[in-house]
Image 1 (spheres, rainbow, N blue to C red):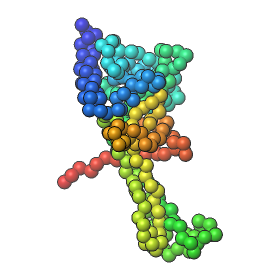
Image 2: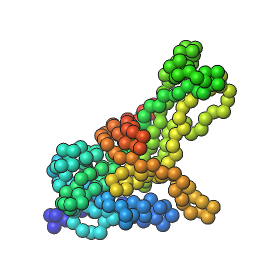
Image 3: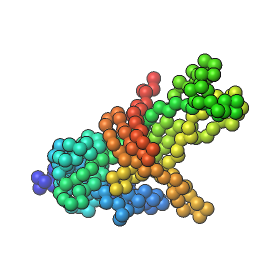
Length: 254
């Protein structure tokens, strides 16, 4: 009875999670099915009391009324492969060691992924025919100070990671078509994704759109490794290199 009482509130959370997932699946959402894909080796669960720097204790998701599992994470902690700080009730994504089933190689506190993540992007000089053949430095040297100043103005790009595996992107989504004089600088086109998941320990971002039959199809995707996850910092490794995010907190309304 003591053990049952110890985990009863976490079991209630698990039941609520499953109820919510069931509703989403009935509504036609594809992320619940994708999250528990049979080819995904990630273990999903809810953190239980007793987690520390050597052990992770969790209830499996989908919840099957079983007792909590325990995995050793000392080596993962030493290798900085525990992403985020584990709190009781947090959702976790865990990669188990293939040679030793009692050890976890990677733990991601997916609860801490939720939020608004931003990074700054600086513009580049807009292409002009009269500057062809010059280096970038030479092109900038020929510019008036007013245009040079525009090159120092960053914009916030990033992503809002939501519950239920939804996400939104922030940035410039199209170029303004005007004359060269009116657009002296260009900002990169931001990627558009609307769903996310953890798959085999990696963050996968998807752009899912309905086809002519109303079936949801993936029209674009990208994958990144999470290198660091802290309360206000996120570092991810994409195919073209590292990207460092800061957490944006909405300012209180007056």
